[in-house]
Amino acid sequence: MITIINYGLGNIGAFVNMYKRMNVTTRIAARPEELVDASHVILPGVGAFDHAMQLLNASGMREPLDEMVRMQKVPVLGICVGMQILAESSEEGSERGLGWIPGRVRGFARCAKSAGLPLPHMGWNDVSPAAGCPLFHGLEADARFYFLHSFFFECANSGDAAATSSYGLDFSCAVQHERVFGVQFHPEKSHHWGEALLKNFAAL
Amino acid sequence: MLRPRIIPCLLIHEGGLVKTEKFKNPKYVGDPINAVKIFNEKEADELVVLDIDATANSAEPDYKVIADLAAECRMPLCYGGGVRSPEQAKRIIGLGVEKVAISAAAISDPGLVARVAEAVGRQSVVVVLDVRKRSGLFGKGYELCTHNAQKTHKLDPIAFARQMQEAGAGEIVINSVDRDGEMKGYDLELAARFRVELGVPVTFLGGAGSHQDIADLFQTCGVVGAAAGSLFVFKGQYRAVLINYPTPAQKDLICSVVRKPI
Image 1 (cartoon, one colour):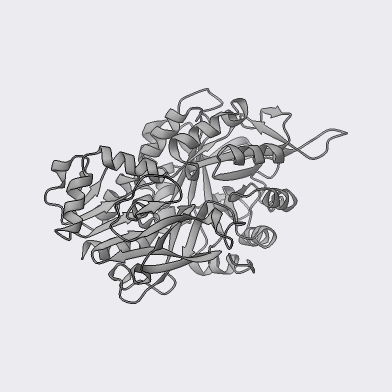
Image 2 (spheres, chains in turn yellow, red):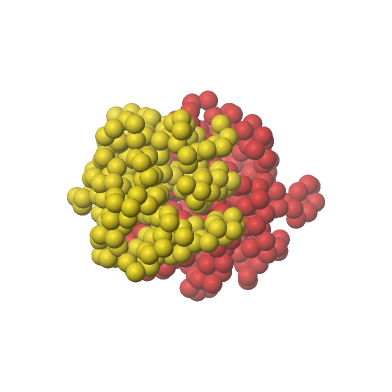
């Protein structure tokens, strides 16, 4: 079953509602024992990197998730800060990330090309998927998604970049390494484009 | 490229959806949940819902109503009305709302915005400033007001907006009291001044009466938010209630005036 991780961050209800509209059943996991039967994992998140890692570490779900993702290859989709914590570290904080996708998280404010732009990067932006990423399968060429963030994922291996978007500079707005996926934008708030992406994830 | 945002702004008064003129004469226009459903279908960029009773009546936010709206809303939602503590903001975000708007309490309690940003992250903090042209013989410039424009404050609106940005606002909404419900266009002079002074996303509310008015705002200010109430709930010169929103093609046309993409 599609399992949405509730570690105290992110709009859990929005994912439940989106999948309900597609007649896909979901389950919310707030404790390790609720992770059994997870066929897919959604890792939401908003706010600061360190806060997210601290909450996830304290939830007791960190180790079982590590095992599921690294060993059993259960597909996982990190959203917004839930995507950023897939990296190894972040300029925003000092906590270690999950390290499921090699890379680090950087701030637009510290990059010369984006430093003068309004922050956070807020609103609807175009997304250019890399060929072959199953999340974007069947999406229209003009697909756009809702963003709300000031930090972005910088992949260590360019092959892990699954889609790019542009805000002063081109950045990886989606990442994929094997069965680990992350998107910086909010598919749960991105109308039919987001619905298509979540449907694609559920079909993996 | 990042697109400018076109945002319906819904006002809640005594449980119903209303539209005001210059912050007065609320006219009933329908049921809030029903309006959210229609804006879902029309794929609106974002939605702002303001409870105009909460602060005026010193009431708590109505968490039941907020939860119902958040559950129904399939686009980013900003809620405002009666928020004066980080605990309230945290609770509202927990109900599935993306952004919390603070208005009167940001002025009466200047440390509040920083505390709320600490609690929910600055990306979820919106400061709404109600701005009005100074009146009287020697009136010049603009003034800040609160409590549905019943109270005015001595603060300089631009200096205060900058102060809110430093404190942790992730977005600032400038609401023109004089233009509310007039449907004769945004106050472009006011908008341009705020746009150059601020380094966070800015949204303007008050005055939009046509898609052209929104295009004029984007032409003047570039990639900003254009919020509107009357435009999206009324149709025609007799102001018949009809929830509406630009189609994707109309939206592309409105946004095409932004020449300098980000």
